[in-house]
Image 1 (cartoon, rainbow, N blue to C red):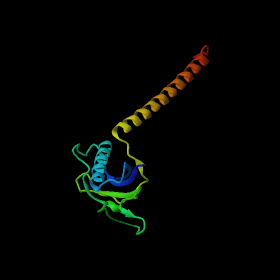
Image 2: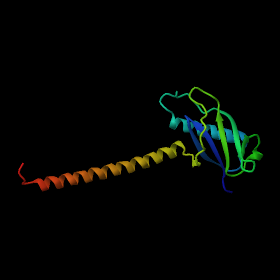
Image 3: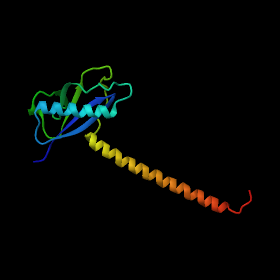
Image 4: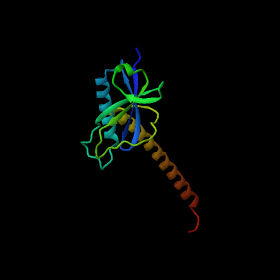
Length: 155
């Protein structure tokens, strides 16, 4: 059986995010809420600005579902409203560090767990280090060539 995918958008620190969440089957509303709160709470930890306290957590106020037929949002109240690939929007409770901002919802992206994010960062860091080393080698070679070319020339 293929996983059941739910797209959940939310506002974090003035920016919209849209995360793809996979479940082994259609989740209960309680499982969906628990997963999305944990996921977005972790996402907040990765994106937290310096002026937002560490105790600031994602606090779900309500969930809405987009109805493609009616072309409007409505409150999610039943698992019967869920289907594979459905777009949801998670509204947070108001807080000093959070206000909803009206923006377009971006395309969904897979959620990177802390371990996956760390691995992606390590790969990016290694690629960056390799690029820096290549640039340093090119600079050293150019300097050596310039010194060799200048040898024997009057000052």
